[in-house]
Length: 111
Length: 113
Image 1 (tube, chains in turn purple, brown):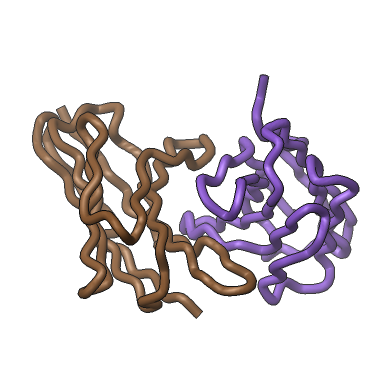
Image 2: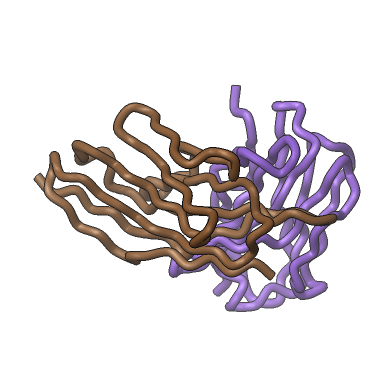
C-alpha cells in the first residue's frame, strides 16, 4: 500500500495548456503539502492544507490552484503553463507539520 | 522568515570514511530538525530527526547533533557505503501560526569504492 500516491508520474505538455496533478494519502494525516523541486534540487514549499483548509500559500502565482476535497486528497491545477513551471512537483503529508511523507513526484516538462 | 544554509553542496568520500554535513538556521524559536535523503529519481525520505531539547541522536551509522546556542546542526554518517550516495537535505520547522518546514539547499554525497 503506497502511503502517499500522486499521478501522473510524468507530464509533458505545451506552453499555455492547463494540467492537473492528483495526490492521495492513506496515512490519516491532517496536513498535506505541495513542494516544487527545481533543476538545482531546491525543495520549496508551495502550499499547505490542514484538514482541507489552506494554511500556507508561498507567493505562488495564482495560475496554481490547489484543491482539497477532503483531508486525504490534495490536487494541484495549473493554468496557462509556462516554461519556468518545468520541475518535479512533490505532494507530501504529515501529522502536525513533522515527519513529512512524500509522494513519488510528478516530473512536469513544459515545451 | 527562516533562513537555512547547508554545506557543503557536494561531498565525495571513500567507502568506509565518515561524512559530515552542516546546517545553520536563523530562527532561535525553531524546535524540530529533520534530515531527508533523496536517491536519484526518488522521493525525499526522512532518515533521522532531532528536537530542540536533545543535543544528539544516533541511529546505527547515522547521527545528528544540535547546537541551539550557535543555531547549527549536523548529520554524521560513519562507515559510509555506496548506497549512502544521494542528496541529503536538512530542514527546520518554524514555529508560529503557520509553521512549516524550510529545507536547506541539499548536499550531494558521493561514496566512491
